[in-house]
Length: 631
Image (tube, rainbow, N blue to C red):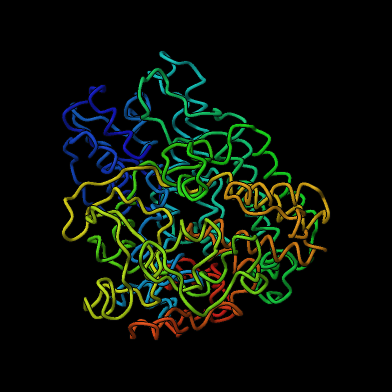
């Protein structure tokens, strides 16, 4: 979807130069110019840069529009430019593939570590962040997307060209897409910052006074209600599958559908029902300037019911199914959920992304990779054994001795594990083929090994593991590679998560409901794990033990998909699971390598680390803003 403009450019005739100006997108005229510059760059058309300050400059410029340029008003009378504007609204959906420079969700949890200290992920893990140094700050970014979506919604209705060609249906669909995106951007703000400022349908005029720009944050439940309402409105109009609008190719793949809207709604409501937001009395003093609690102080079981109903609504669309590889191999089935492009499990995809960079950063140095995106020992220990039990329960688990596999000794810690472990983790002496490794070979992650610490000044795993899940072996863009890449969409939401959302919410609202085990077991069945309630594997006996199993299943099934960071916070377990992260002893060779050692520290400061700080810049601009606790 994010290259829609480029793919359609050859079909659309536009003037040689277009200058777009407006006084409605944000609190200054330059915002719309910046956004439209992105749009027009897809046509390789010269954008006339305008430098001005205040509304007076805008007004003067609008009085001097040459004949060979079109105004922003005229853009929304034409089909092609309007579609390109919508394509730009999609561009605010984050590419989550870069987990070391742009997104901290993978490395700032207990499931993985980024080895390179030169990136801000390191600063985050050692607590080097403040309101004055708000790293990974996305507040303004998402509000730009929100305002772009609002502008589109408010100005597309009278598009004469679309009305002449397609009537109201296409305009309504495009408005629903923008409405979905706006709601999604609000949710992304909420999951990072908690309560946000709701702007509604109001456009901020370019000549707005400082007093008019003062807007307060809304209580979290109000934010949830607004976003859910917007997603419902979008879902009522959006198509069930991407609408090609007469095109014979896939240029609209990734555009909003009813499943995407309902799926995001299910996630929003699950978060809202969770302990961090549902009757969290630890935040009784976190209040608006009028004294209203930002976080509702009264627990409501009905929030869990809403979350369960929302997840079930996605399931009941009957549009999606868990991916199963044609070979039936459970490892390939689990891998294919992410690597098989546009498969029936994927609900929300980002079409253009930098996943090949993720591949290379996760690949061993032997394969030409950069060898530095590393699972923690805590995550390795989370995987089940092949008998479906946890490592502390199964007689199959041992941390002594070795078994010869493919001619190399494999530490018994890694034997008899479930298929998702082998699909997700590269461990010492595991076999890898990909990148510039033309034939399969064992990966050597101990100190003097070919992918070990002693072989490179920076590119080595601090835990003695590498992420394998979601890594396409076809990618070969690292040092020594030939530059070829394996392109596939980036999956932001899939049915496996919906099943787990449903099971979790249902267990909290209606413990003992048979659907809880049904959908938990469907997740396990895909990878041939024994079912709960089958011979040798008892079903969890009560709500508490079922909750623990659902959380464990979620940790494994959604590993390295940026879910864990938000899960440990919404469950309020982050203080217990963060801190010292472990791995093997990467400073050693031979058998002494297989010793649990502290690999890094992932700091969690309560209450500050639950939500990001609002930057001091934004605090200074808005005197009604209330800062998050701890900052």
